Length: 405
Ligand SMILES: *Cc1c(COP(=O)(O)O)cnc(C)c1O
Image (cartoon, rainbow, N blue to C red; front, side):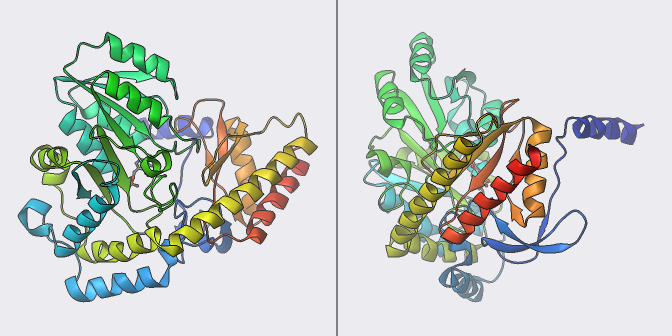
């Protein structure tokens, strides 16, 4: 009876072409990766799906730093940060990130978390108490949405990039504490939030501005500090959540804000207080990865990403021009996230399967991750892709057009 209930739900998911499943990576994160599919057969695939934008996950210095960290600290942290899990390496990562953000946030301090999901729950539940109202952008990441659900604050949603609607909601609010929360780079669209206008609204209505920079850190800004550097913003209202499993190539996350905010989070954020600290060896390696990200390696890799983006966009634009009426649309994105919007769920999954037949892995993204009727291929580029890799993707897409027409 209980199993039949779930089997019925699974059948309904399957009927909408919405079934999700994992593949198993047999080799490390890199553009060319050996992956076992649902059939258990291992194949080398050309991957356009990881968020390891700078290719640091496979950087030899990062791998060596993990080894060094294990030799110094061994395995796990053994406890939550306030008990005994906070190591010298955790402390140094937080101090380094505080230095990165000091130009953008006065008295900046960072506090570490195991994942970005946790950090988002933490900031929204700790600051979004019963006195507060949260103003949340419609296309925010699922972890921010879950944070608003867990928070005691009331929640208003404003339409994508619609600062005018946000201002109307802020003007109508009688809440003592207002929290605006947005992705900096929208994870399924690749576009960048209008942060200067959002900060102006935050100033006018005395609100915090929480920026989830999961896809901006390491990618945006001359030094890779992310969206605040990109726009040249500075304010004590800014609270940034960053993740370290994407462009930093490892794992973990942080919140950086005025030190009063981080001191309060240390007292109030239950996900910080009641969860085991990340492994110190990973924190130790993060120091290497952050140095690469901010230095010449990062600068060169950001430039390479921009070159690859142009090559891909020019190629897809030409393909769409050759096949008018195809109904595909390339999203307006200036980041390594380059979505190709197809429309229906079954159509996008058929396209992803046809690409996989040709040895390429480009994930199809369906509702509820994206709005209904806007299923898409989420193409992500890494600096370790080559021009030849991008050309192979373009040729494979062209072959798929032939198949579907
Ligand atoms: C990936 C992601 C997160 C979650 O970060 P994890 O460290 O993977 O838990 C949060 N927000 C956005 C926008 C993301 O893309």
